Image (cartoon, rainbow, N blue to C red; front, side, top):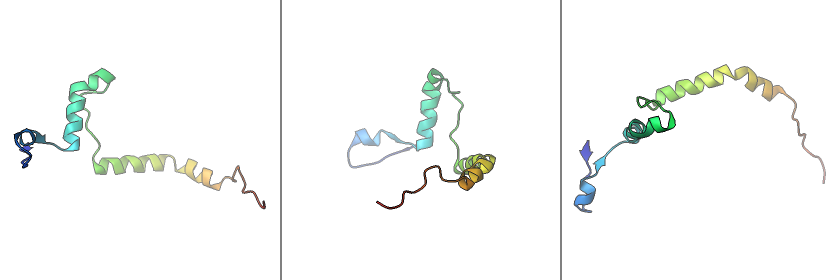
Length: 80
């Protein structure tokens, strides 16, 4: 871990600079079992997130198309 160097003094310089993913992993390792999460859980990568979103859309495409083809249940009001 790289230490953050700053003119603010030694208090800031002694704090390690970590990424969000590293912070998430540390919290999950320390406290995950308290809420039922496996301590070895890893956050999704960008490609993993894109893959998962693609699967959800692909699995639900029939529902999406059916909803877009259905008549509008609340037709627009005309006039004052």
